[in-house]
Length: 216
Image (cartoon, rainbow, N blue to C red):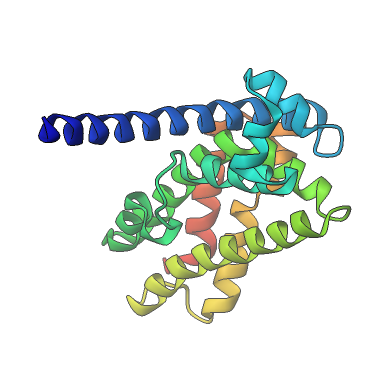
């Protein structure tokens, strides 16, 4: 009898975790719709709760503040899932660093950059626009910029170690160029304002990165 009770409790605990994860995802998806439509300032926790079909208390328990909610949404869209795995340990990034062909490395980076921007590019603009008015979001925006630069530098350092960088181009200068080409502001200019397709942006970004960074 006791073994049955223990088994049921384990099942119930697992089921509760699954339900909590599903509810959390529904809240984040609702928040994304409102943040991207109305902006950070106009979006409220109560509005997100109504959009998600949950009580406001549920949203506050899960995320505490609106800034916390936006931060959690950013992490979800950046990574593409709810797994707590840092970007530098993500399989796609590790595969780029391990790829032996330097041109393919840069083209893989451009490809994955396009995927992330399609998923999170609009929210990035929301974060950037809110950064000056909210200190927590300002800190988030600064951290995003720092981590983004670091990811570009990680690839450039590998290219440098293998002797693939153009003559006279050091790691910092090469990182600055790759960072500029991959920057979300450039994505918004070309795709958002000039009407480029994401595929056109990826091709141009990859071609430009190879031309700017690699020894010919």
